[in-house]
Length: 335
Image (tube, rainbow, N blue to C red; front, side, top):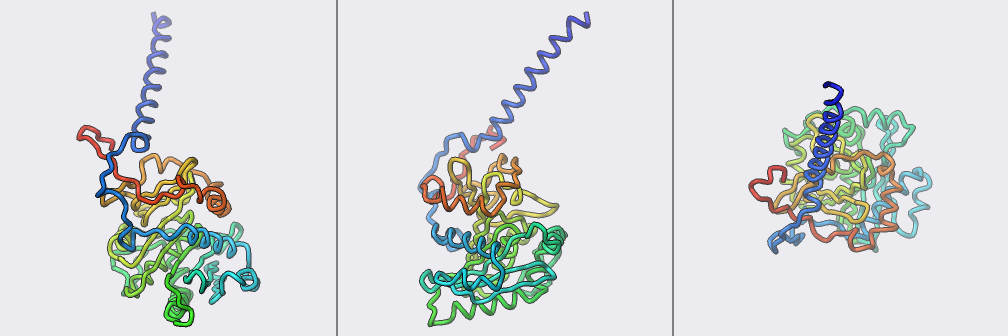
């Protein structure tokens, strides 16, 4: 009798497993597949500075600058940049492993602070990356509830970088002979994390100036206090984080860490612009399926550069509005 029941048990188990997979797939993909009712009120107007993405060509220029900083050292940067940008400052701290530069372009009318990403075989860089405790800043211009990644905080504030870059950027933007209009901070991976922290700090101290942070494959840098500060309090700060397909680094969430800033998600067949990580103001945040990815190959800087070279000019890969929040019925508990 037992032998006769075994095949039935196997069949029931198999059917149950298949049904579970189907249901899970429906739930996970629901936000991507269900029709949305988008009203005019939910259309992105990009009327506020914080919600305004930089022009496509500027984002491509910033990605190109991060690549140049990764490939060249301080002695050769001036020659490489000549003709397009002027090198204003180069920073190289062997203790924290931080390399960064400030460049400007009179033709493009912007100054940019550019931060280098992690060098694969740099012990100092990895010490900075792996020093992941969240610590209060103790800086008067930063709210008391803000806590930052200790390694990144140290790299920005304890080696003279913040003071040097603040004074140089303000000097450039206030120079009437240059007639610059925009200040950008950018970087890939760890460089993006440093750009995000410094950009927030500068916006908090200089509320008469606007700062745009554009990062590529940036890891998370702070707690919920930092998220609230950068997204809701600093109205003169705009933060957009480019995430290439299944890049794992922006998806890593340590204990008490929070994502901050708008998400430009580059996908295989299109790109989607999410309103912060969790959504708001009638716009969608990233779906649950966004977190179910993990690729180191798609984290490389060349994979981000390739997007601008091959796909950014295609309309469906450069959205002009945030994704609208789904309209859910009361019974759709997963929505």
